[in-house]
Image (cartoon, rainbow, N blue to C red; front, side, top):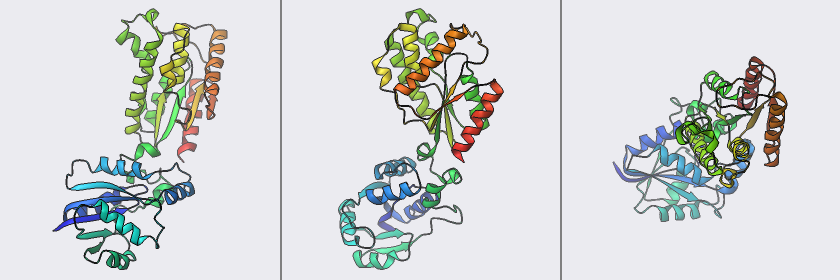
Length: 342
C-alpha cells in the first residue's frame, strides 16, 4: 500500500474508463490525488477540432469531484498548465508545479502511456511509475472518441458531464398550439427528460386560482422556478432534453396579464442556451382548458407574431417555425431532433 499516489490526465472529457482506473489506483494508496491537467491553448484546440464548446479545466475538475464525492481518500485538484511548454518540453515546470500542489512525498504516479515512464523516472526519481490501461476491455472508449461522437458513446460519458453534451430543445408557442403535449410525446419517444411549464400551475398554487391578481413580480418568480425545473431535467437527460417554455414566454405572459414586463425575467433569457427553438404556429383548433382566453384566430395570429418578434429582438437565431396538424408537428419535430443528435 502506497501512502500518496498521483493519477494525472487531461480528462477531456472524463469517462467510465477513467473512473475504472482511478478506483483501481485508489485501492493501492492511502491517499490518491487525481490531477486534472489543463493547458487552455491545447484544450481550446482539441475542442475546436471536435466542433464542441470548450471544456475548461475547472469544469472537468468539477465533474470528477462530483463523481468521486464521498471517497475521502481521493482528492481532485486542478493543475493549470498556462505558460508551461507543451509536451515534451514542459516536464520540468510541470513536475515542479505538481510537487507544489501535493502536500506529501509522491510515492507512486499512475500513467496510461509507456513513453511517460522514462521522463517520470527522470523528474520523479524517488517515485514509482505504474501503467494502467483505462480498463479498455470493460470500457472500449477514449476521450477523443467521445469528443468526436458524444451521442454514439453516450453510455461511457460520466453522469456529471452529460448535461454539457446533451442537446437542448425548446418547444415554444402561444396558447393552444400543442407544445405541452408534444413536448411530453418527444420526451417519451427519445427516452429522456423534459421540463414542464411551471407557469401553468403557478396560479393555482400561489394565487388561489385567481389570475386577475397577477403582478409582474409573479412572473419573475415563475422564471426562477422554471429555470430550476429546467436544470433538474437537464441533469437526467439522455442525449437530448426538451423544455416546454422559457423566460421569453414568461415575459410574453407578463405583458399579456399585467401590461408590463418584468426586469427579473429578462435575466433568465439566454439565446445561446438552446440548440434549436421549435416555435409552433397557431393553425390548429383552439382548445379551452380553463386557462386560455384568446380564441379569435386573428388575435392568435397576432400574438404568435408578437412572440416571434420577442425572440428575434433578444437575439435568438435558431428558430424553426412548425405548422400543420398535431401529427405533422410531431413528425417534423422528431425529424429535426434526429438530425440534431445524429
